[in-house]
Image 1 (cartoon, rainbow, N blue to C red):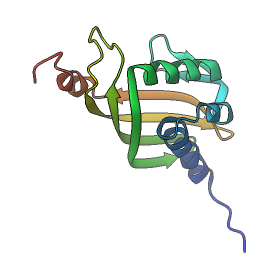
Image 2 (image 1 turned 180 degrees about the vertical axis):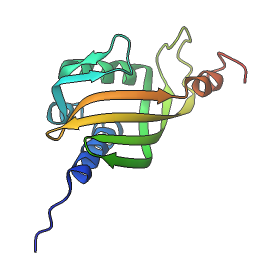
Image 3 (image 1 turned 30 degrees about the horizontal axis):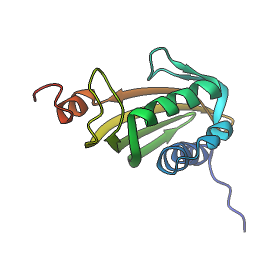
Image 4 (image 1 turned 90 degrees about the vertical axis):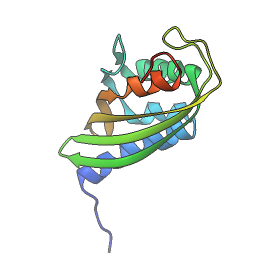
Length: 142
């Protein structure tokens, strides 16, 4: 007997692919499959738009922070939204916020809210602990 999964579960799988296949495994081409042409990422300034914007954001982030690994600490889905509470670990390998690359291993936590339509991400909004990251890099005192 085949069991159908709910839209919410399908949406969670899309978000999991974003973290696991794109960031953890480095498969940028997966963005072509999971990002809508109408996508807007409000976590960047200016916001990333569409598949090309998502790829530019990805390349920019991985140029600054390599050896990226995300752990999804909590994943909640309702209707067309998925909320991910995550922890990222990285190597600071490029200049960031006026701080030259240190080679230091750092971590960051955040919460991202995704809007999904037809199995593709159409919107991202992030709340990230930048203060903790800047403290780890020695840019500010805690």
